[in-house]
Amino acid sequence: MQKVLFLVLAAVLTVTCLQAQPAVPEFAPLPYAFDALEPYIDAKTVEIHYGRHHRAYYDNLLKLASNTTFFERSLQEAFAEIASWPEALRNNAGGHFNHDLFWRVMAPKAGGEPQGKLAEKINATFENFAKFKEEFKKAASGRFGSGWAWLCVDTDGSLFITSTANQDNPLMNVGNRKGTPILCLDVWEHAYYLKYQNQRGNYIDAFWNVVNWPEVASRLDQALAAK
Ligand SMILES: [Fe+2]
Image 1 (cartoon, rainbow, N blue to C red):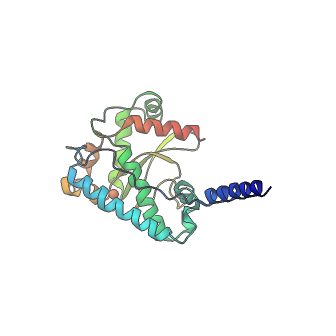
Image 2 (spheres, rainbow, N blue to C red; image 1 turned 30 degrees about the vertical axis):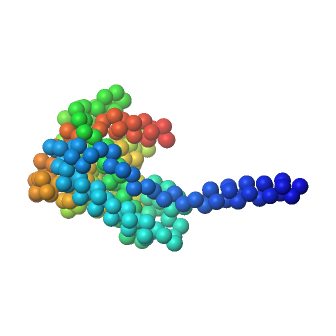
Image 3 (cartoon, helix red, strand yellow; image 1 turned 90 degrees about the horizontal axis):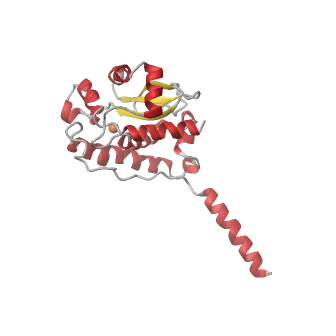
């Protein structure tokens, strides 16, 4: 009898511990070498951007979230209520999530044009791929100061382009048009200044050569499946 009680207690404790397990995000390895996106995104920029800028957002996020209940929800869930958290948490949680997505939607020997359902949706929304790129460039170059350009999936499954300031993103409840991001471009100067100086437009044009369209398509599928 005692053994049974002990096993039940152990099971309850295990479940309780698992439920209370904070969803601390990981600082994932860069999925390619620093120089893998050359000549479009230079090795030095990737090294500093990933190893120092992104790392600093991640480390600050962990520090700011410690001794709070922030990680009792996923980052995506936290973004839906981010307006009620301190601004520093918003900036660093966004900084980590946005960069993590950014590294994954790029790849060496990538670029070209999207295929399948993603291509169909882009054509249905923006008429064709060239016009989509024009609209995206407008959002990325028109973002005053620092921020991001995004391709998102709306609640009805359609696509839209938007941009956000600083480290905000379209999952946040801070007044941006909300949606599920499937492609992003960092337009902070730290993302391009070493190679392109103040020529943000040239950096945006070069970005198309490293877009990992299969990854973007897979994120579209996940977003549609979640609706
Ligand atoms: Fe950045």
